[in-house]
Image 1: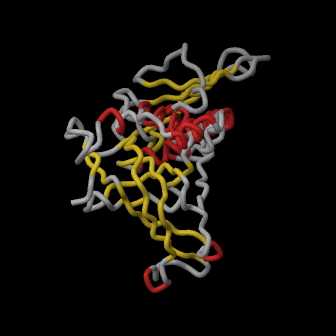
Image 2 (image 1 turned 180 degrees about the vertical axis):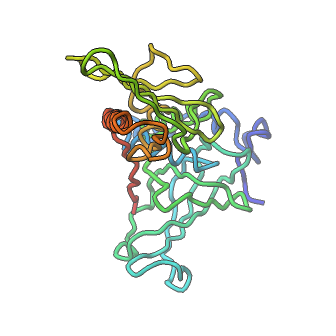
Length: 294
């Protein structure tokens, strides 16, 4: 059986078996000189966007910090599903920490990652410390990436962002995924240019989310999002890089669908569609593109 990192058995002697819980659950192991230098030179800002990390955290039951020891380019017949110009690489790495996952992962793991054939001889991964997102395989020394871009270089900032997103995404009151829009209505005010649009969303767990756009003459529109059955007049537009912002910016359809507008007359429907577009435009954009490491 390969050596393993076992959270439940982490109190054994440091001379055998599992590694201590304190070292690999919290990622707070005493650094070696090389690790200390790496942390001192870590970039001040993460290299991944909040939305990209949220996508990976939600899709990945396990997240680990590893250091690559060897990389082998597999022959084309070992990866018949790849298109021209792409190569599959077999990577072996030392596990340096388990950030999220089940109780057991091996000290040494292997995983497959795809990259351009032009990098087959020199993929440039050996020696790099990475964060990998995916799941532990049927054997605890095998790791399956969520995708070939579910990998990023480790830095203190990247790990801190990953931990922040995990905490927010796993919180009991975390905003659920948006699955549709159930209804919308618009009320015109008594003064020219005054009006309010409310839009009610459908979610994966049935919890309500509502959007509100209030317009008053000579004022900028007031945008707000509320979690609950009643629209919160004190609510505001979600701050970027929060889970509610992520659910809205990355989950709302581009345009207000026709179904929620069926009960409105033409003028009301046009106003509701205009306000919906304005709400989406006011949100910080959802940047979720993955960057390959090869």
